Image (cartoon, rainbow, N blue to C red; front, side, top):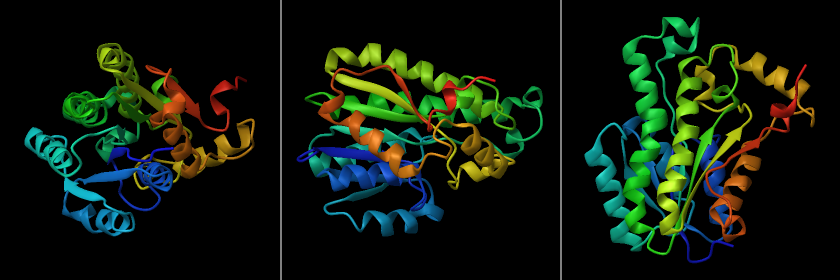
Length: 253
């Protein structure tokens, strides 16, 4: 499905990461992949995982540093000569902003959450577009907290709302280059980043009980949806947020 395609994956922290599930799905369907890592703390994990895949590339990239972003895309261009798809799975807010009340969010926490979790999509889309010479696909990861209030999600919900709006504006801008931009709104998954949200265990239990499928979604299911979106099977889909949450978002009282 993705033979002779090159993808770039942002956001792998460990083997439980949604970004890694996306990478596994893409690689198993023929894609060559480049991975970024943020900081030396994550370098070893990413190198170990990416090392399992053929002809992969690992590059440092802190999206708060534009020179890192420029260098990462230059490395992809030098090695592969093109880019066909990109998976953006980056989000961050200070721990203290993910507990208590949203109204107490500080200016610095708000700025950090919006820059890393939302603006970075626009940042990497701009850098990716010149390498997507024959069109391409960009997929980012959102969450239900962008649309409804989720306890303790706070400023991250605001950032995800900005992310979903960015998807629509980017889709409108990049469509003329045959570049599609979509978001996946995944249900809660016990990833490293999710553990930063207070009472994540309770949330997992509640969603698993209330969703139509009576369970939580898996990272692999999200990865397979990303595979669909970056493939030609989704050639007519852009600017959308697709829920992959075992149906939880459809439920009312």
